[in-house]
Each structure stands twice: as C-alpha cells, then as structure tokens.
Length: 402
Image (tube, rainbow, N blue to C red; front, side, top):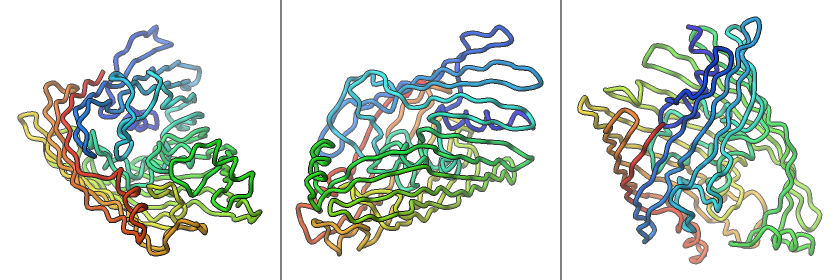
C-alpha cells in the first residue's frame, strides 16, 4: 500500500514509544502536528537513588502539499529535561545530560512522492537504525550493543548510525521491500587523549606539546544503506551497512588511516504495541566503530541485541531483553601508554520490564537490569573506571505520550 511509504516508515522510529501526534493546524495545504513524550522516573543504580529525566522530547512535524503529487516536509525535535539537570551519568545515556531545558535531537527538511520516494537533509535517524531499532523498546535500559549510540554511549551523530548529523537520505518502498540510502556529508576534527577525565582544551594542549597520549582525529563523510523485507504482516527481516573513514594524527607526527565499518542483520516477529507475542533480535560485526568506557577506540567487536515480549489483554506488557557487546581482549587499536594488552571489554546485561497501559499512550512501568559485564584488567584502577558506568539497577517511572 502507498501509505507504507518512506515518511510513515520513518515516523514510527522518530516518535518512540508511539507515533501518535496531535494536529494543531491544517488548511488542506499546510499541516502542523505536535508529538513527543514526557518521561520521569525514580531510579536506583550505582549506589544512588534519584529522580531523573527519561529522554523526554517534543517535536513539530510540518507538511505542505505541492504540485504533481509532491509533498514538502520538515521535522524539528528537541530533548526536554523536565526534572532539572543531573551530574550522574547512567548506563546507555538514557538520561541525556544537558544544562539546557531544550536541546536539539532531530531536525530535517525534505520532499516525498508516492512513487519516487522521499529525500531528506539534516539531523535524522540513520539508515543503520532501520536494521536494529526493533530491539530498542526498553524505556530505561535500551540497547547499547547494536552500534547505534557510539562513542561511549553518545547519540550516534558522528558516524551517522544513530541521530546522524548532516545526513542526506533517500527512502522508498517497492512492494514488501523498503530501501534506505544515506550519505553523511561532513568534515570533523577533534582531539582524543588516553587520559581519563581530561577536558577538550587540555587534550588539545597536550597534542600541541607533542605528548604521546594525545591524538588529533579527522573524521569525514560516512555512507550507509539498509533494506527491510516485510515477509508477512508479522515477520520482518532487516540488513544494512555503514562505513566511514577517519585519519588519526599522533602527536609524534605519525598518521594512521582507519576504516569505521559496521554491518549486520535483524529479525522481528509481531508488533510490540499489540496484544500477543513480540520477538526481535539483531547481530552486527563492527570495526573501529565504537569506544570502550575510557574512550579508547575498539579495533573490532560483535554486538547482539534481543527482546521477547508479551502484551496481555489486561493492558499489561512484560518483556525480557538481553544485550552483549563483546570486543574480547587486545581490542585497542592505537598504541596506548596506559592500555593493558590483556584488557577485556564485554558489556553484557539483561533487562526485565513490566509496563501497565493506564491508557494507550500513558504508561506506568517498572524495569530492572542485571549486569553481567566483564571489564577485566591487570590495572585495578583502570578496571574500576571501566566498570563504574555499568551496574545493576531498578527504575519505576511514568511515560506520557502526546
């Protein structure tokens, strides 16, 4: 059906947890809808109990009917922090640490046509997210093994696999197939240092002084593609790839060109929001695509995410999720003065959740995480630093979707 075209496919991913929105203006040519959700929770983890923001956001979706079946579109989405800022960084960055009440999450403009598909430009969900988003349904401890939220649990903006910056994207649907192609057209320079808790300016100063602990990274354009095959109304297959290159310049003048690559497949059965069973899993192989908990680049790793859910007729949904991101040992690509060659990086955890739908878009929930990670190191201090952002936890929260 035409209504399964690109814009509707994207909408289902942008407005988590549901794609509902309220139309606030429509003159038959122009329309504006408002969407998003407010989420707040009490969480106990890492030895602290606190009220925190649950990645709340608000968005404005604009559409304009044009000639010959074309439509112009635009979306602006801001993260909202309704409970105030916090200096505790929780696993998976499920609370965006921001000083501002509003901060940019998404923003793009584009054109779409029933036959020719959709093209958009701006900050938007990457093509890679098509492959793996079907396991990303825990409200608190969403997955961090699928290569989306890269660079120590950020939003995937740098390499275009999450909410990518400066993305040009094309989407279209033919029968049961949906295709997404993208180019992230950018040129970024930044500095990294093999020192915990160092500021950006201090790291740059060390590089300029020729300190071996500092590097300058030149990260340029990335490219991605994904395909979705809807085999039946309940069964979906996904596959995709994302690739980029960056140049590491060491303080001693050595230059190293590195390929950032991730590829993988996914399988999904059912609809997470409908009564009955839902199951999804994805697996990926990645190279130079993410960092460990100290910010060191990981040479290669395998990531797996999975979720199994059942929604009862009494408006209770239960689920269990399992995620593992395994880089093994000897995973740090560049020579590190503080890197133990026997370091092990294996992020691994399970989540058990119960969601009660007080109304279709109003959820009272409880979720618990059990951590099984292995961050072994012969350096005890380094092992402690690696482990401190991964822990067991429990959260009780309330999610109100517009």
